[in-house]
Every structure is written in C-alpha cells, then in structure tokens.
Image 1 (cartoon, rainbow, N blue to C red):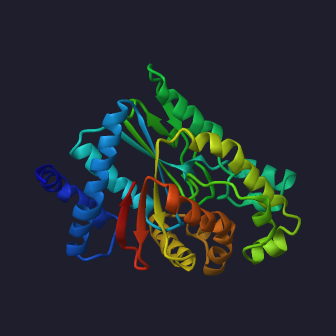
Image 2: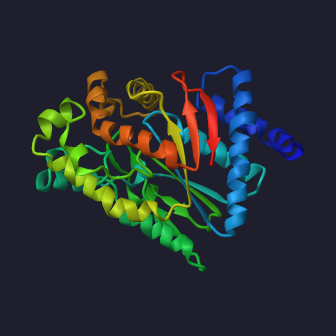
Length: 305
C-alpha cells in the first residue's frame, strides 16, 4: 500500500527520535517492525474514523499501569500530526486527579483509602466533561487543563497548566481506567487482595468506587467514540512494569524523596487490581481496538473491530 509506505518514510525519523528520547530499549528492527505493523495501521484506522465522523473524534485509550499507553498515544500523535496533518490533543486522566487536599477530605468523609490517588472517585470528572462539552460546540473557547505531578502527589499551580488554544480534531483520553465498567454487587463482596480484605472490611471503599463507575464515569465514557485497549498478559506484570515506571520517574524528577519504594508500589497496585482484572474481561470483547501485549512489553497482535 503506497500510502502506508509514504507515511512510514515521513514519520520514521521523528518516531525513532522519540523512542530514543524516551529510552525505549528495543532493537531498531523491532522498532521499525512495530511502526509498520502496528502504529501506522492504527493511525490509518483513526484517520478513517475521523473522516467518517467529520468533527472532533474522541478516543479512549486504556490498559494496565505501566503497559505503555502514554508512549503509544504519543507515537500516534506523531503520525497523525506529521502525515495526516491532524490537530491532535492527548490528555491523560492522571492530570485530572483531585488535589491532595480534596482527597484528604474524601479520606476523612468517605473512607481512608481515598487518600491514595487512582481509583474512580479520585478524578475531577466534571472538568474532563467540561472540556469535552466545549469541543462539541461549534464555537471553540480556549481552555486550561490541569497538570498533575506524581512526584509530589498533587496538581501543579495554574500557571503550569495546559493551554488549549485551538480546537483539536482528534482527542485521545488515555488512562488506566478509561472505559471501565461497574461490577455486579455479588462480585464486590469478595476481596481480591489483602488491601481489600483488611482495610475495606465493610466494603465502603469498594462500593463507593463502583457507584462512581455507574454514574459520573459512565456519563463521561459514553462521550467517547471508540476505545483502544491494551490487554496485559497477567496482573503480575503490572507490578513489574509499574516498578520500571517509577525508576523512570525518579530519573526525570528532582523530588526523589517522593518516589515510591518497592513495598509501596506493591501496595499501591492493589488499589487498581479489581478494576484492571474486570477491564481485561470486559474490554477484550467490547473495545474497538485491542492490543495484545507480551510479557516483554512487545505488542504481539492488534485486533480491529
């Protein structure tokens, strides 16, 4: 296909430069293979969906922690911008975490586990919906979106926020729980790990999270046109990949005292386990694009629906 070859030649340099900057350790052959077999076909698929819709396309992009969503979303942005000349905006649901102060309030008023960011209920969903609503209107108003710094576990001051001055044609909302569905009550009762067993004995935390998925999050996710899902091989990989992610964060950040230790990460991912496992069951069947991951982070197959 000539168009795919033209695309490859146009984006190859920027793509390899980006991977080198992100310290993605793979052979050049594997990187080229992924570009040709995975990222370029995905970009053509997105372009076709945008053309068919004819106005701002909203994509959700989810998968287990540390699975590589942010990297892949950036790669798609490079291709869609460079070859298809699309105005594309990639937004992370992580940037919409509630402030440390607000989560503290939740931990006092609802359950102590809400002090830890991550689960539904700890994001400012209204702010994401407001952003989506603005994009749905014909007249675009510039908007500021928050920026979250994981190393300090809090939002940055407003002067560091993202400024969206032009209306994007394609928006990718990426995040571990994007597209997650609520569970039936019988599943909520059985703890999936020791965190749930000993720190949520009355099921208050679990039920509150599930209610959030049933209401606010369901409304937000219904605004998304298509979901792209990265299917992890098993939950053990989330710990390994999250550990790698934390080491990367340590290199980038000057605030090393706030980087999580081995045991802290082990506990931290327990907050995500229930929803991650449910998403593997649900989104493997319902997502528009499913990326099947191998244990070494390599995508072995892409399923388009």
